[in-house]
Length: 239
Ligand code: FPP
Image (cartoon, rainbow, N blue to C red; front, top):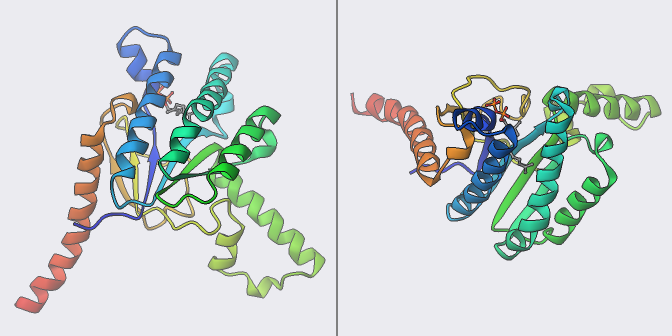
């Protein structure tokens, strides 16, 4: 079975999961963290080497202050509680997104997680936090324009590889499979450059319900899509 090297996930539906149970949205986000924990463990047992999760988008600042506060708190709690286990399991943590807009204590925690786990090789966990794809591209363009203005780079030499190297994801492989839960069928500014050729899988379940079975289902869908292309070529040879 063809396994993706890199899975990216839009963890959507925490709010609706909570609403369906008559619970506050925070309960949905808490259950979302549990689902993230389970997913990291499940993915660690597969040949997948990269897992990128959309934890807070640059557009999420538009939510009520209390919810933004809760999401910041949950990130801190997640790193504080899980960093030791992640490290022991050989998970390397990376963070993408604009850190300039984040509080100092959060930046310090993110840096600590990245530094501690730098040598790990079992799984790369990329947390997209204060991340927006267009914002990432704008920041990369600014850097390139500054380099050109200083005369450090010739605009003629700017190609796709150069742009990729200026994105937050520099050095990371593009996602092979992108999963979104909750039944919404859009990318919402998540990895627009990197997901240009990703296989997209939209699952109806809310993120807090995402389980190892859903992961297997997405992997099966991915493998079938890959196999269909191979199948056409094989039929062509046989006929
Ligand atoms: C979408 O659900 C989810 C988010 C905006 C945040 C994702 C966050 C988590 C899974 C938990 C936090 C994890 C970390 C590491 C901080 P939604 O609120 O948009 O749900 P809805 O569309 O049903 O309202």
